Image (cartoon, each protein chain N blue to C red):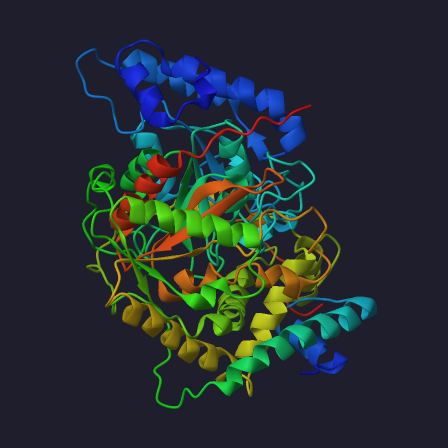
Length: 488
Length: 95
């Protein structure tokens, strides 16, 4: 049996019975990394010695009678905007080149305590700004299903690594779709939790009212297990919710009987690829087959979501990225004799084009004379978008919509026109604006063999309902293959 | 929604960014087209709508004012491009 093809829940059963060791599991995945990485470029840092050492320690310390910690021996990949003490965290930006965090993110600490084994840091769009991973200052990650195409972004490295079998589990971050969109393009599951469900402590901030860390996996139970480990209140994150963490695995097994699935006609507009629409209809049919009910709902402000998002996230980013000034960490421009010039030169040399573009847009939106017309206006439209969902959830338990308008596009196809790239987020940004949980689920492949995902959006803290519906889709649709082959 | 070169220069200054002349022109074009797209928000009537700054019901989250362990200064200074005598060292404010 090829260990790298198995979801973690299968590996866990083997580990529990002693049929395989954590060291063997890690080695099997590291071999897969070695085999594919020079074609995929999913990682910015692989730590083979450290992960084997950690696995060996876990194997040694494991008592025969003790129940295994929840993610014992699970290889996991971490997006490079998650701080891991002593391991370079760069957000794939030159401005953080060589930065070694003096602390670990809460999610990283929780993973380690649960027995998971991080294999390394994965590639991303610089500072999480992008939808293709092409904005990385370091490298371009390829879509494992078609190397001429993008894996999506900004968590493209994590999604590609999981889709290629390099690890069963990955963590990404999602501000406007950056976990869900690459998950859809790479044929894996990707969840953005409710805002506040998962601590942001140690996640390098992009837009503080929108960011959430999210699990990526090939199996619904794996997503549930990973979410269960990282979720929960954190005193280090003042925006983390006190809401109890339920047993997501148990919740995912409830079936679809009586589940009311909301579908909005606004989501089938022109611009949605016919194969994506077909995938969505397939998902709806599968849910109905399993006893769910289809309900027509309306999300009338959907078309304003991109404009709203790109004002709010850029405004917040302009503030969050002000800290990169060459003073306390990262790159400092050599030469300038005065502080102001040093800062300007550092930032100009250290930030990539997309990052600078967004900082400028955000600065403009917040500047005197423009604040009311732009930032405040966007905050008000944000309230309207939230209200759309509140209204929808009066008559349904979750909403089904596309994750992306199209399957994976070609490398270079959208990188010349920023607005074109932004428009690919049309279906994902609303969940961030409203702070709601949303999950992308694989529903099939296009005629060209590209993955198609569908998106489930739920009320706040209803991750269990999303997982419940996703589990039904997983069983009914039985989408195969789950692991990309990367033919020569 | 046209944005002028001068406006871009002003924004760049506010954001502590230095742009080459060619970059300034390109930025003016790109920001202009994005802002034009964003104009559509003006069509919405939001007169009585409260802005949403953030989505949770949290207000003034605080903890007791008690000293707790935090990052040691020496450890923090390790990441600095230049430091000395327990401080971050930077070029002088006036050149």
